Length: 150
Image (tube, rainbow, N blue to C red; front, side, top):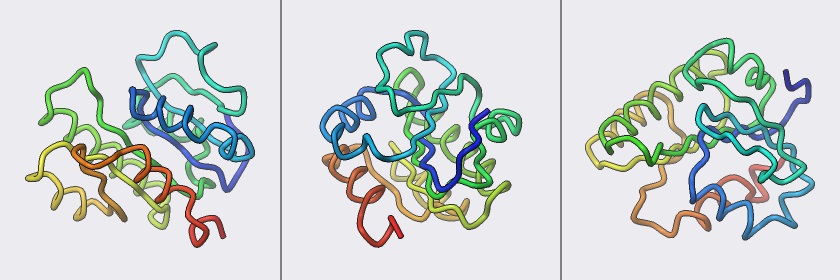
């Protein structure tokens, strides 16, 4: 269980998150990050400053282990191993689970289909990232902008 607070929770491990962490690794090294993923097997590939929790991000027990109730922000990424439809549905369900524990958490959600963007907004997404945009820079800008760090 992660016991820190004011941390960032990243839900889902995919190539875009990997690129985000490698592109901005030095500036992220002082940031407390908790990664939740159900598929990642080789955690030795993760940077040292990332705390990893293997589990389902829609499961209350997994979110409690990530100490989501004391987290500052979440980034929910789309699962590349699912169809776009299912990836969006699971991202929205993960968002609902997180907001159920901490309604005020700042949430960034990656959505693959335009039809689900309104559902993500209804579920409480503060910012939606669309796959077609330069994703790593957008994730970084929204996660680590000066106004969000305070």
